[in-house]
Image (cartoon, rainbow, N blue to C red; front, side, top):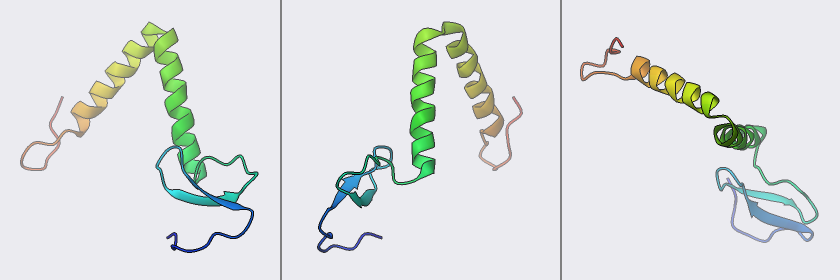
Length: 84
């Protein structure tokens, strides 16, 4: 947890570009994500946006995968998975 106070000289407080968590980095650092996980999530998002824009067939297949996944994981009111 980030404590409110003085940041050491030569350091900066930045916000993660993915989750907006505060990170303390040296002033000359190129770090923009708080963790490798956030960096990977952002990279995956950029990749998918590029693929959707350039390959309509890939976009259609991705949408079908998403809809199948949602149908398999949707739960009815009793808490049991609904068969697709």
